[in-house]
Length: 364
Image (cartoon, rainbow, N blue to C red; front, side):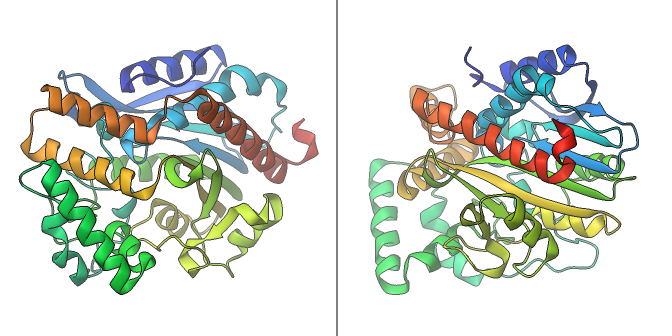
């Protein structure tokens, strides 16, 4: 059975079917934006276990829309194949959140309907000024062209290589992905305020963690790291007890503290995990992005660059548009069966380690 869906709508159907068969309590929260054909888009949840749990495991997917298939596959695998073998303690619950960014999932893009990167949008908007990214202004036209061609791709790669030679790869990686708040049409835009999915997800977590003393959140992503391998990108500083808990219960070599700079990946602003932990101080919350590597960075950024041009200036139904969307989908969810097996095996292993850490031996 192929658990990787061909699109958002097949993904949602598979998730809801698996949740129903597992006996989960389901809830759908529709957003205002619509799908490419005018369809309703929803963030869906499936709840298993105690109504007022003291311990909460959360598995979420689709924060960066087009990365959703791996998360869907992991969630459906858990519900169909793994859940029957687990014994959930009486004081515990499991929550699965499907398609955190349903618009991006449905439209095959990283960003949402506001061109916002959801995982750069969780600032404390009432009390915090967005960080300034003056260096982004120097590359905005290269990264977000108004005209798209092979020549513009070549010019972008040449400029990027020149910057790598002058400033180093970490500097370039950071400028591309850390999140920017001045160019609404640009890649990695963090927004000018909380977007709708931000508000919905905060509400989901507030309700889910209301009674919890401790929780673990696994947010599934793709595109970072070596092909088919997985990393646990902690949302906590290295000295934070939450990060230490992750190192204790998962393979330490796979746990990277981006916020402390203990990694080759840049720290980013407006992360969901950081904001949800801050909003729920009563709960010992441990949060990480479970990242599965796909292709090399140049291919990934060229795909995202092309899709962003298409969304703002192109025709998604044209031959060129379909090719761009196919490439973005492939970059986030390779059709290679060996890659998909590694993702499913990696997800199963990580969830099992998390289950043991949170619920102990009594959970089996």
